[in-house]
Length: 138
Image 1 (cartoon, rainbow, N blue to C red):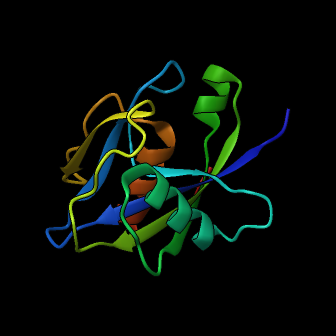
Image 2: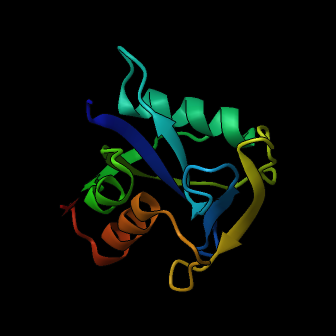
């Protein structure tokens, strides 16, 4: 088994709300920020821009790395070990829309201080790092 590197993007609107999606399926049917696995030869920024366009149809510019999360709780529960590169992007523009309804059933802007449950570990860790101005969560 190998460790998978993923990117999670905290998309923030002008009200300071974060964009969350409700995942479908058996693996982690939780609320989460958007993102995905880094492809071979891809920068974190390229991954973030590609995944956000694929998942919710919007174009983000200048996503920035703000932290790293080693998602050990998920590993202990499911045997799937991921390391998340936590990123942030400001967004103003058209409302995002579900491009992959088989993967995500709902989109919602939420206060980062009142996250819906159940919430995906990697997403919660990313938002906590951002709110606390920390870089690493082990």
